[in-house]
Length: 286
Image (tube, rainbow, N blue to C red; front, top):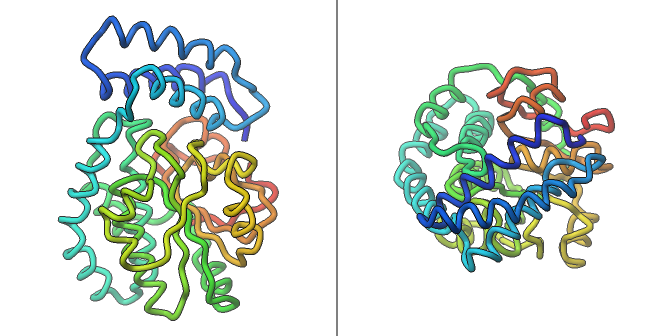
C-alpha cells in the first residue's frame, strides 16, 4: 500500500505521542517536532507509510538521545505476563486451542503506542474471543501447516509478544519448529531482544533479530542474515499492521495477524477500523 493524504496528520500524531513519552520539556518537544516535519515533507508517497514513520522515529530518538518507549514497553510486558496464566487456561480448555491462541494473538495487537495513547487489553481479549474475524483464512493456515514444520514468526509490539508466546507454544505443541523475529534496535514499542527475554519467549523458542530499526519489515533495510532466513522460510506468520503495509503482496507464504487500526489501512482492506484479521497474503493485498 502507498501513503495517503490521510497519513500526514497521523505522522504528526505519532511524533507527538513519542515526544510526550520521551520528555516533559515542551520547548524540546516543539524543537524536535519541527525537525520531524522535514521527514514528513520528504515523504515518498509511492511507498508504504512505514518508511516515513521510520525516519520520524529515528529523528526523535536521535534528538532525545534515548528510546522514549523503553519504560512503557517494559510496563506492558509485565501487564501481559500477569495475564499469561489465565490466558493459557483459556487456550487449554478451548475446543480449538490453535484458533483460540490465534484470536488472543490478534487481541494483543491492540498494544500499539505508535497509534494509541492508552489501550484496553482485557476488552480486546473479550472481543477477540467472542467476535467474528473480519477476514478468516484459518482453513488456509491449517492447510499450510500440514505442509511444513518450520515457521518464521514475525513479532510486533512489546506486551503483545506475550500473546505471541502463547500462540507459539500452541504451534510447538503440534510439532512445529518456530523461529521468532524481533527488531535489531528500538523503534516505537516494537519488540527487541530485550522484550523477548522479558516475555520469556527466548526460553521457549529460537529468537533472532532482523538487524533493522524500521517500522514493519522493510526487507531491503534488514540484515543479510535475516534476508537469507526470510528467503528460505516456507511459512511465515506476520504480526501487526505495519507488517501488512510492508509485506502484503510479497511472493511468500505469509499469514498476517493484526487489527486494522487506522482509516487508511481499513479503507485499503474495505473493512471498518478495529477489524481483526487472519489474512493470507496475496498479490492483490496491497
